[in-house]
Image (cartoon, rainbow, N blue to C red):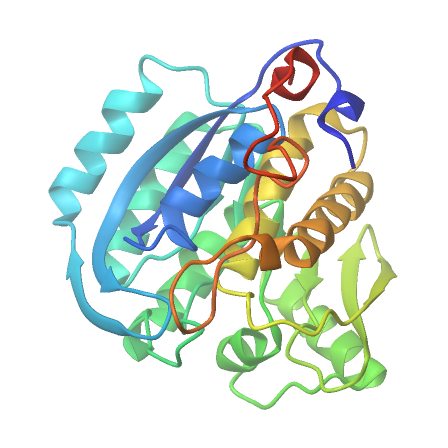
Length: 289
């Protein structure tokens, strides 16, 4: 998908509420890159600092709930927010702060990415906060975007890539209060990966070939933030999800152009904007949103 295919009627303001990954592959930094690549103006509210690279999370420093509330209130009273992406919220207190701000300011679109475990396997959401996320944030989101392990955490059971299992999980998440569910199949084992979008009482399957690469750090963050960036300028959630899926697939395919870290490297968020060779000049066409 080319940036020129994105409507230029207006530039939406989109905010990421999440943690900071210093390596830039996930969290707020990845979200801001995604917003920018897709023609949205990116804002960021920091819920946690992490010591993290492409191989591990070595520490988490949660922002005090009162300061998170201050960030949100200060932003919302001044900036028109067209869409919100909610990512890493480590504790029930932080979840409550975000839920309260969303209820009071009522942004048009909310995408909830229930970030629970990093690509390295390190846990980012405390187990005792899962019920708070279900109770307070799930009903406020236009769409929740768990991967298979995250869906299992939310439902208290294993969720596999089997189509019937994914369908049952999506229905159960909807029953918990989610208006729409995007169940991501990237943790599946086959050469063909399938996501399931449950919206308006029907299921839509979106499939793509698996790309053989280790550069998948921040895939979930990027997918959810792409949906948030596109929702204000797409007629339906399904179209926004399909376009976001195409963007993420292309960003994974182009990730080998980057050399970042020794572990799970990041996606190439600007694959459609940057020159393909370092010596190539940046033309006016490439710089246009």
